[in-house]
Structures are given as C-alpha cells and as structure tokens.
Image (cartoon, rainbow, N blue to C red; front, side):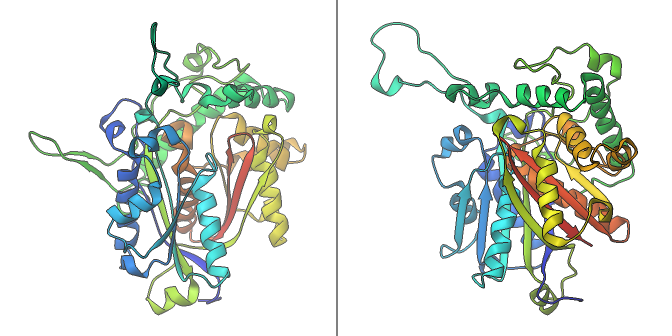
Length: 405
C-alpha cells in the first residue's frame, strides 16, 4: 500500500432503492439502517466491537419520529453493536450520509478512532401526516393534517420549494426544460444499460432486502425498483411541480426508501487486517451558499475539493452529481466548464455514467453515500483512476469527496 496513513474505504453497500408504494415502503428507516450496518462489516470480517464510531444520517424527521429519537443509536444496538459504541444521528438534508463520511474521516485524523462507519437511511413513503395542535385538543371542527413531504415543508418558514429555486436558476444558466428532460431520459437509459451489464448486482454495491411474510415465503428485493422506460415525448407532456418553471416528476427522482453504509479505516489498519481497499479518500469538504442557488452548490463544492488537493476537473476520470433534479448536474457541469461549450459536453459525458437518482431513486439521507460507492465501484471496474462525487442538500448545502482507486 502506497500510504499506510491514508484513509480508505474497505466496504460499501446499500439496499435497493424503492418505489413509493412497494413492500419496502413499510420498513422503518431504522430497520433499513440495521440491514446495511450488519452487511457492511460482515463483508470484510470486521467485528461490531472493532467499529469505534458510527455517524448516521437521515433527513425526514417525521418518519424517524415514529420510533421517536436517536435513530443511529437505535440502529446500532439493534444491529448488535456494543452498548459502549459511540454514535451520532444527524440531519444535513441530502448531504447527510456524506457528512457522516466526513465526520468519520475527521475522527480518524484526530486520533479518536481507527475504524468508522458512515450510514444513511430514509423511508420517504412511510412519512406520516402530522396533526399540529391536536395535543391541546379540538373542541369542535375538522382536524388539519400536514404532509411533511409536500414541498418538503420549506414554505412553512418562508423558503421556496427547492424545485422552484432549481428550475429558475437553471434557466438563468441557460439550462432549459428540454435539456433537463433529455438528461432525465439519458439517466434512465444509462442505468438500464448498466444493469444489463451487471454493474448493479448483489455482492458489490447492492445487498438484498428480505421481507418475511405471514404466509408463504419471504419477499426478496434485489434490484432498484424505480427505473422506467420513457421518451422525450412522454417527459414533455408532464406539468411542472411546486411552481417550478422546468422541474417535473419526470426530470426529478422518485420518493424512495433505502439505506447505505460505508466502512473506513487507515491504510495501515486495512493492511493489518488483510483487506483490499475499495478506494482512498483524497479529500472531503462541505460548503453552503444562498438558499436559492441550490442547483449551483455541487459545482462550487467540487471546486472547493479540487482546490484542497491541487487537482483540476480534468484530473477526474468520473464525476457523480446527485440528480436531485436534472438541473443539478447540468448547471453544475456548466459552471465547472467555465463557459466552454466543448468542455461542458466533455464533463457531461463522464458525469453519472451509469445513470443517477432520476432512475435509481433518492431516499434522501442515503443518497450521498450511494453516489460515493457507485463511483468507487465503477472506478475499480475501469482499473483505477480518480473521481469526484458531489451532492446538494436543502437550502443550498453541499458535500463533495474525491476518491482514488
């Protein structure tokens, strides 16, 4: 191993990502978290007591609230980790599971931990409606219910729905509805081709979800459930959502359930345990900007990561930018191309080469770890290289990671 002090990913796994109304929609996000936490250590023979620190991300608190509190602590105990294990539950919107990776890296660098785990888990379809004020009682009249998934609740405090901001900013950057629909179609087609080639298979990125039934055998889910065949004509017929000028249900990802986990340690520790790293972490950074600029934040976070390493975007063999909407990879690659049309086209060709969240799904707390492992596995298939993965989070937060394989 070239650098025994560098921090490496030794295991990375996720569940399939669900559609809105399938069997996975009834599984608590904590239980999905338990699945990946067990699997990610079992694959490399790491014992629960060897994991010094767990960071656990989710960002739909209304669903977690069905089990009340500290989902990371609950999941760790249910997964068989010792009671003495240290864990942290956090919410940094869609960035959450990559924030967990960053905190794990920080813990190792600080000498506080040797082996760390980053987890993200979400079940958006299970999110309940809320009945504000009901605890005080209603003397007469109808009970008002609130859907936390509708506009993701941002308008309650005066912020725009993220789809509205993303669509408006996309137009300001010259990324129109037709371009976003074309990207969405490409995401579906790239994912379909990657799945046919066996790139999304059990034992690499994916693990099965097994759901016991009262009668008969279990339901076994081994593939992402949301990919679909479509066309530009079908996408063009869809109406924009939440007041956005461009964002539709077709060029946005589906609401999903799913969980992801990444296990990290120093190169020295991996060598001692006889483990072949999946990837080395060269840098990981966070950023934020004005809430309206959410479509731009992946680009600015990538620029910050490149600046921290002295690398350039041309040094990246692969790019992953989460498809919160098609606007995000399009706007962000255009910013990274600095107005050069040919460069913009080149960057698009190496971005989300196996499709993205529009096809795969976007269980928000789990997606940042998902784009990280998707990129790592693809770099390994290609015999190595560098890649950068970036994600936007609600109200324009960002996380980016550069990996070397």
